[in-house]
Amino acid sequence: MIMNRRSLLTTALTLGAMKAFPGLSYAQARPLVFATFTGSWEEAHKAVLVPAFRKANADAAMVLDPMLSVDQIAKVNAAKANPPIDVMLHDPGPALVAIGQDLVEPYPVEKSAYYKDLITEAQEPMGPAPFFQVVGLTYNPEAVKTPPTSWADLWKPEFKGRVGITNLNSTLGTGWLVEIAKMRGGSEANVDPGFKALEELKPNLAAVAANPGALATLFQQGQIDISPGNFNAIQILKARGVPVEFVAPKEGAIAFKTTIHIVKNSPNRELAFKLIEAALTPEVQTTLMNPPYLIVPTNSKVTMGGEIARVLAKDTAELKQKFVFQDWKKINEQRSAWIERFNREIKI
Amino acid sequence: MGAAPASRDVTSYGMGLAAPLALFFLLFFVAPLLQLFWLSLHNDTAGLHWGLGQYLHFLTDPFSLGVLGSTLLLGAEVTAVCLVLGFPIAWLYQRVGPKLQTIIILIVLLPLLTSVVVRTFAWIVILGRQGIINATLQSLGIIDTPLKLLYTQFGVVIALAQVQMPLMTLPLITALGRIDPNLDDASCSLGAGSWRTFFRVVLPLSLPGLIAGCTLTYAAAITAFITQSLIGGGQMLFMPMYLYQQASTLQNWPFAAAISIIFLLAVLAVVSVFTTLGRMSRGYGGA
Image 1 (cartoon, rainbow over the protein chains, first blue to last red):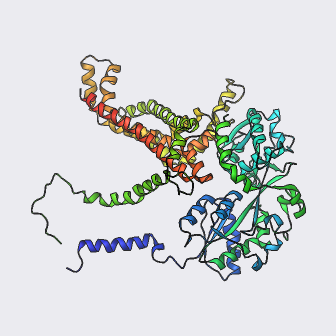
Image 2: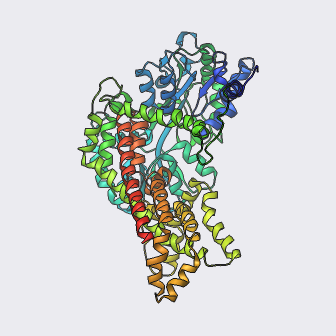
Image 3: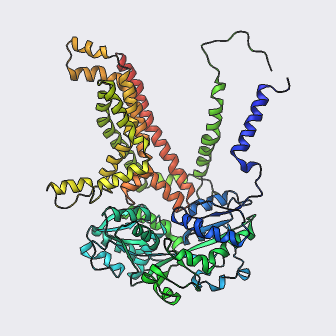
């Protein structure tokens, strides 16, 4: 007998395994992998960035693999020598973690055609920021007749039981707490005044949401009327007919740099660079600035328009004046202690 | 190939058939679990220094123990609600005609056919300030200002009870179906009232299903990350969210691993209490 049952089974299993895990057989030649974020980010990148990149690079193969920042870091960490991702996208906190763990390459600034056109704050040598996320005040114009103008408005007695915030798991929640601390004389290194302010906010708090997405839905349910909120998330709700408005508080809207990085040891280094270049072009940034995406551009050559020009900034000069950037290196140092403190102290 | 044995014991089965599943579990469950345990025995986030620091941190911290306690309590509350509401449905199922049985089974299974996220969002709509409950009570003039239902322990228990109800009802329906209906009549003809029959005959005989249902509901309720975080909000901390926070936001994997192991052991302890009760009940049911 040439083939007995056992060897037949082994062959079948091997073939099956190769079918199930194609990565086993050809690990080397793979398309460019860009780990974007899930949800509206993925939609925007699929519709605008990917076509622009492919058009400029002879239809080079690429894949979007949307996942959270922390998952990107974990995946690259697990296979540093042959990472499964070529380009990572990060919020400011995780970006510093990725840089600190030596997972990303410096951006070849001298080769880049667009880097020098970026707003100074977006010029990050370890990975430039193609987009900004902006946090300001969100409110329901049907319930709040006079638009709020300052973070301090959240403490007004008329908003008793109407305010929503998120906990510190999110970039939004942490950044907002730092801003509140600054308003009361604190800083990135000292958020004590922020926690004191939170204590005073308790009578007004209707909800502490687990994440910014959950916070947004609370407007729909009339559970809250006012909260700190992400400009993009609010535009999505607004487009669906939910009565919400966004204002930049007079203290300045909090701007987070969303940075894009070439992964160290990437087998597709050149294409990764090309993809990031595409993300920095005025064309891609202009398209992403227009509805339905409304993503804040970082290339100073982009002329601000539409909703962004109306509520945020008409041009780069106004943007610099109205946006507040935070020192996430300092924030990261103490963030875990703050989260612990928030867990313990904020019970409503 | 070796020759097959001349005679086989037909009452025993080879363990070979279970080998593929066993292998699968070994690879994808036992191995990661061991890795998790190994990680939890490190004092630093980089995983270089061995020690029991993470466990000491958790077990000497009243806050962490409080989170564990409130999670286990949440499970108990949800299980109790499911049991009290689910038992009558299962009991009814055995006493109605086939048409009604189909309807009951459909109602019981319906929640399983929609995603947990959808079911949980439905509860946000029901419990919200302008939700169904508050709107009804207000229009009836029973309350002036809306009640706070969302983001409360009460809200989480109610929503979880609905979400996990099939896990309780289905084993109960099976267990009650196995009881010979003649036993009821026998008990009655021997002079026992309905309540006595229920407590002395039906309840003991349904115990295996009841315990299976409780175990499933309990385990599902305490680990229900989505429902807990959406209905409970960001300030009600239960173990799954605590774990997520440490692992994902803070990248403190050794502590997150220690939390998982402690949580796992706590759940195993509760489940083994259920199982012990089940074993004792067998003696009781036979008496």
